[in-house]
Image (cartoon, rainbow over all chains, first blue to last red; front, side, top):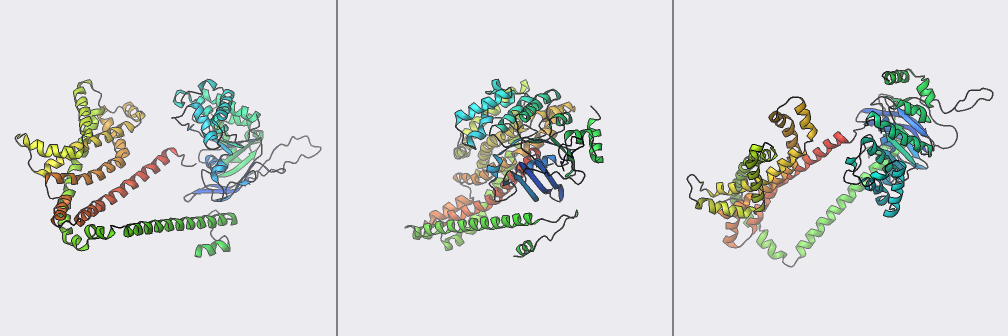
Length: 273
Length: 301
């Protein structure tokens, strides 16, 4: 699919699946591989035949209206929901295997939710060091040193001893990102992390995500921030009714959408900008 | 089993969108079924083993013969059960009567304690003092004090029936507890709800009646049931004042021939009433947990 035809000057980059929703990259195993995924709640099918690859050091953005299945897809990858059918692989591990130790697998994945979900009874530092210390058995001193390093990078060093209720929404969300990163996950899942923030706080959180991309983090994120997706995403997937309608590079999907439903969605989203 | 054979022969069911389960899915489901069956067998095995151990331990204890004779005597049980059941009816009446009074008074106390009007300060302080005193005094002691002390005052119109006096003591004690439970419930409703109601132009009273109280009561039903299960048992404390309720009847008959089986009969009756109440409280609690999940758990989009 991503074949560069010699002689032609077209910089054909990335994968371009049409309405059929392909997305399997040609060479090299991707870090996260989702094949033929299906999930339903009760009788309602929320995801059907989802195929999606996220290669190492890639940022993949999921876009689509509410109810399109973005959050469900992320919940399935983090094993917060069991899938009906299909497989999800993280490296060599099949996450969808019921014989799998789900907790061990989750330790390899970091998640940040829309509502920050910080633990209100713990200080910022304790929030960030809880998982390394308890789930990964890292000694307190090491965990705190690493946490302070992370918090410093995210501009939160002086907030380490504060409690979450003393922080702004943007600061809380950055602490949540630090908490997810503290266990050094192979993959980071971000579920509309700026959707609950005041507009002037969105930037500081997205800057952090951009910085993570520079450092080579592998990220799968659901987002409504089209501007961010355009400049930061290696690949953009448009979901509708639980199906990937279109995916490709950000310029392709956001700049020159082919599928009519992608065009409709983008014109609705960008109308008021 | 039939489901196994279906699974082995491959996909059979199809959805409206032409979806058929893959071999991977069927294999996973087969594995999960196996796990469930194994878990079930372990649970049954452990339960049976535990029960056998308890029974063997009891029967093989040196005093088992005498315990069996004096506590588990079939003929004694049959002879007195009717009388004890008759006495138990009085317990049920006391329980229902007290419960109604306690609910009304407890809510009133909670409301008084959450008011903020400066003119009501004396009322607030006396409510606080009341809770402090009556939660601090053991219920049995309170039954004695009310049962023997109140008639001794020789006031006009003081009830003389030991049943009524016992119930007054129970109501005094439990109102203090239930009032605190209600107060916790009122405090558990998020302040934003009060603001939202005020913003709509509802008065203080309307806000309480239509917005705060319904949510508060729903939040405290499980702990309230817990208190009522306890009240149901504590009606037996009234026995010290003499009315012929279940425990008193059992006591009289046990003293008569030094066989304690009647006590066990009374215990059985109390258990028979509390078990359904407990299960109901469990069920309500499970429902509350599910509701909270629906509100915060990101029900999956």
